[in-house]
Length: 111
Image: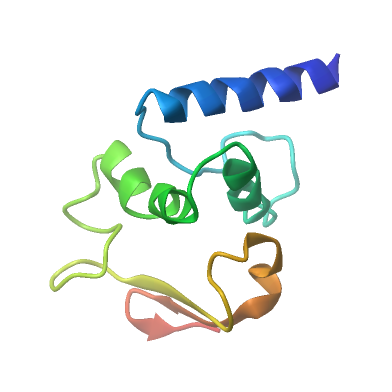
């Protein structure tokens, strides 16, 4: 049963993406342990999203869908800036967590 639900979810994501539905990466599942949400990026790519669209879903699209795009979601003057600096290919989603070098929140380095 659980495998059927997973495949139904993947299929719905594929169809929504193909139809142009705006998608946001989030932590709304309540299924996995806290702090493992980077795994969602590889899953979105495996469902057919381009790497650029996956990153957009984690940033500007998520901000827009929450009504916060005037405050965050992009690197632009006057907006709050949270930045993750990675070594290597930022589209290598399976390796992304191990490639994190710096994390900045609201312009202050926290890692």
